Length: 495
Image (tube, rainbow, N blue to C red; front, side, top):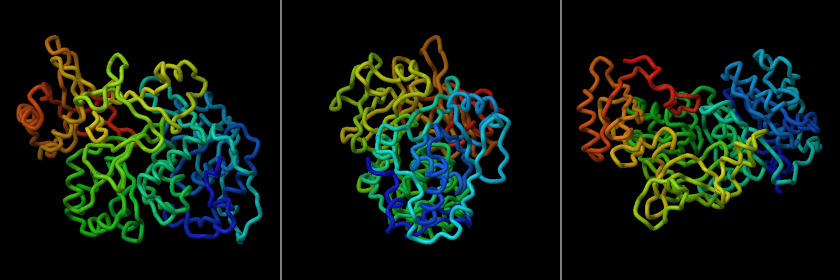
């Protein structure tokens, strides 16, 4: 198998250009090769390492070094609670934890040997060409590269084992879809313990030989500054794009910077149509969406040379097979009438299984080997996929209809009196389930009436899709990636 980072092992490319920038600290490709190579040599022979994944140069160097050494890395979320961290450490059994110098680690990691990643020491005195210090990258495509833990919404987090093959094929498929090259400069402020910020947002530019500028904390000023200074791509989650849409009327420099970007990409959750349209109207540029998950990495995307279509996550990426199945697990015909079905996928982008959980691994796959995503979608005649929600929380069966929560949420967000919205179902003796809307009003002192919102949805979509109950909240519960935590709804303070 080819190296994951060919430019770091090619002597002629080691001293070329900036690879990583976090705030005012940066590493060139040559300096990254030196730092990660030196650390990889020290990690050689380790069974598994944890990485305290702060948004820093040290985290990026630690993960790259582990991958170059062929040592599986377990990114740890610094915001995780003690019991969750203790579970992950016990389950993954790392031999040591890599961390940024001076950062305090929680008690749950106290029994692990700590190794500080001192980037400054490893690049001091760097001169190209460098001697080979890193061990050769593994040539087994099935070798485990990362163990990324799921969010644990249905039980303790599970460690998805991602092989080198999955990372390489996903990043190369995205390069094909997005025309991604070493000339691109990516801007983002995503956390580095998750697929989006770590694999796509950090390893992606490095595999291409390009560069990434991490903002640390997201701000519209930071986005405008970096895109205005030559960056070509922006990755974000819907919360970030919502803040951009809100800020655009008062920040002409932001609109100008976005208009000059080559690619604006949103992921990790559905971007509301209302925000799509506001950004397009102000900048002339449309945000494209892609769809993936921890276990599958990326499955679909709108292509750079395709039609950016609000509410759609594009077509299957090269190498990915995708089908929709009904409740009995039978495939829906691709040329049949529009119908909601569960997405199932297969391809080289998939994980190899859940660590120490053969039962969960077996349950995740259909008998014929397709991975069950649990996401519900419809497919347009031209192959574009539109996700309507999670099977467990977003598919509402009401009055004989199967209704996706996502389209109702988009309709609610188009109402001027709604700032944020989520939709769930709850038992109803007559309908089976009734549609419930959770709304953050634009004006907390003067929220739109429930009847007004119901009529708005009925006129936009269809009468059977109107919410029967409306709750008003001060804010929607979200996780670190901006996803709405629907299982927490009802536990929040009412507005």
